Image (tube, rainbow, N blue to C red):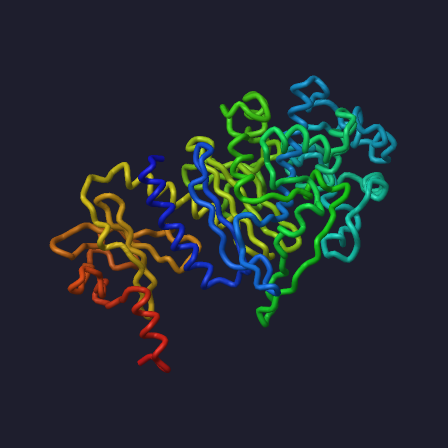
Length: 463
């Protein structure tokens, strides 16, 4: 992606995300984009705490939940590189108390199967009401009791079956072979080498003042309740981590092949290689490697992980080909983080594709957001291309319309859906100061955003 393309797309995100925040019921979120280790975009929206009216900032910290699995998988691969373990060895070789399990299939589970969620282990234990905050997260003894009581849900090494308890077992392996606590190991071997000052494996008193307040889903009256801070105890390797957008951009850049950080490239290739396809994910093409999700969006192959924690929904993806990282951190359950993240990648890809085809003609005077009763339309200049998209959605580039200059200030719609106004004209009307005062879009008048909002606010009824 060229610098000019990046600047153009980042400029669009700034305004579009502001517009979307104003029309969505999400308390707050932070979005960051980096390329080749350089932070291009890092913007906060909304509130970190609604009750205190505390504005969201880029310094605020979120619980990133299952992002923790990427750190745990990295720790395991580091220990393999150091000759401390082999990921195709049996788990019982490192966790001897599992040998007494009544279900003898446990004897054949490998570390790789835990890493790829194919061990067949129960997802969150026999009593997972700690996720409902009706009890504390399990300690080591409680965890052992439940693991030893629960049989494998399915045969190991037959398909992907997500398991937080499986990753908690991986934390026990890290402790057994490193002779350090899990939290100490990942701090010394991952967090400190990357200088991730805002990242840690478990809730810590030193970051509580910067931790956002998480909120429930909105009820039918659109009311949300704040959620208390939680210690995940033995489940830190599966879901305990906290971080912020800048640190996560740095961390996932380090995970890219060729970065020279955290692991050698052969280990990274193994982590990023498809192990299993995720089943029943609708139209989405999702796979799992070792601690990393692998998602196919158009022609892009994205890697990373999502996280769902009480009050915190987060998503991080990176494109290893373009060296681009996109991070979305929100402080409300039900937030569409994965949808937003993929939409940003789609938009970046579209900008890049159109800039490759562009000549030097400048159409920037036609750019802007325009509104009518039916439409919220963004006109975007991409070199000599003018594109129209609906900004009133989390996926504005799902069906972009491409416009061709006809003459003067008129354009023709040359590419749209069959339900659009293909082949029809768009005309821009300018005032004396050279600003667009209205657009006739396929016969319908739409106004600049500010003008429309002012006029709308004066009316008591339309028509």
